[in-house]
Image 1 (cartoon, rainbow, N blue to C red):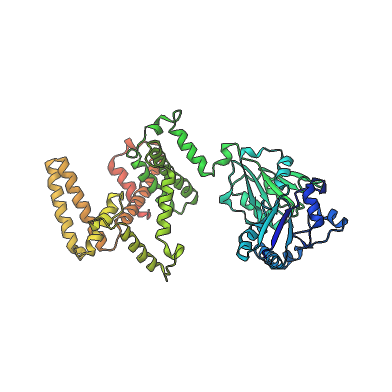
Image 2: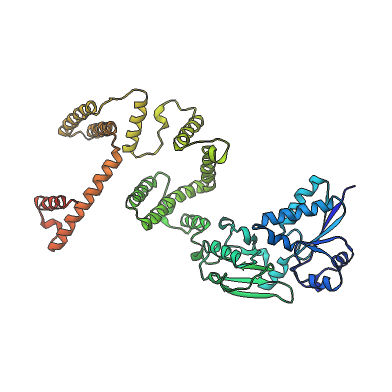
Length: 485
């Protein structure tokens, strides 16, 4: 014979709010188990001589709720294997009741039936206490497991189980990642009962000497001002859409994937400069500028009906999971070298159709870096000078050919020969284990330091650049050089 666990909701308020059918059931059933006796109705049940067993002592035995819930349901399932039992919980059994969800999962495995008798959810009373319409959209979240990424700041947010100072502190710190410190929130305790308390306060005071218990929930109003939502991805996406919308910016509306290419390169190099100087504030700004370029390209793709930012996110997320089987799968690695080896194998399998080894070089690289990568890949199959001094002979040869074309004043041939010369110099740098990008960047920075010195000397003199000869400016350059700039 299959036995049944009848789960009763005690509602959120006093005895006079308890439905008559629920009240009569509580008076008749035996045995009766309570998740907790900390509820306004329980004292009335005690006065009427209703006997029960509560699980409050189990909360004191464990440091985490999962262990508490597991012990409670195992106890109930063990009892239900022998007889029909009744289990009563605060509020409605299917709202914010983890033990009920666990029972619904586990009971069928033991051929135990579950019968749920509803009670008034605390949500009804809470909506009344804070005077909101849930049709505007709301979230119900667990304060003991609050995650920043789950919070939708444009909706009404209700956080249950803010029952002690530790939980309140965790909730506060999590919310501070999304809301201003002085954002007004509302603590509601015992909503719908004669002991109801509604307290408004700035967010930063949430864990400052406030009395909390297991009937306390936090209400966070929706953010309505755009300025308070600048941290949200959706805000940036809407800003970009507005810029390219009918009433947007003429410049932004004119842009295409091709016209934006140069800006992406510029912003990427400005980010690299911020990283080189370990300038955190500038890194934040430059990362934002790079991200802006990505969002503009994604918005153009969406405007043209070709792709959206969700497609971009899906592509990179699936790639990262696919290429990290040692994190998201069963593969084991011992070090970063093995990670790179696995990465290359997976990448090669993804790109089996490529016919040339040069096509494995990342698309869109700046020409200097692409030349370096082309030469590296060609060297792997033996197409290489082998020694830098041999490659240097090619540099001299290309210099002579470029010199000839300069004398002829043939612009197209000059472009070709200069490209050959630069390519040959990259080859020498590679064979000397010097990355050409780093070398050129070092010289750029040196030039900037020395030229800035020249600018300072010109300003000190009260003259303009036009009043100096090149020879005079060059003497300032030599001064900067002597100073180690």
